[in-house]
Image (tube, rainbow, N blue to C red; front, side, top):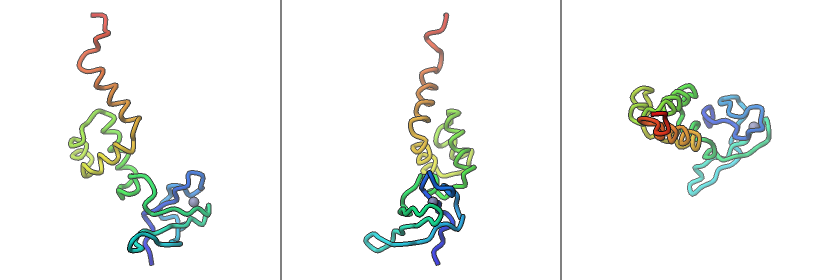
Length: 124
Ligand SMILES: [Zn+2]
């Protein structure tokens, strides 16, 4: 029996989208050199997708609260190592999440950097 509890439907239109362990998934096929990659089927929306599909969030097996916490630390301007220590997740995971957050996080970072240490457009 395949354990699919950490997978979830990747179809954003699906009523069970991103809901893990909802009992909607089954393995409908396998592929890859050693048939090691499973193709999953969602019986709620009839979508099929590879178990490799999905965001780093799901691949990291991190509870969503932790992932959010990581992102909050990053947005607050904490470094990768600092976030690793504070949240207690490996820095590789932190970096994966940072990449996933993508343009938004980058924008926040650029803003913080541009602002530091003093705004040159200030009145003085
Ligand atoms: Zn679905």
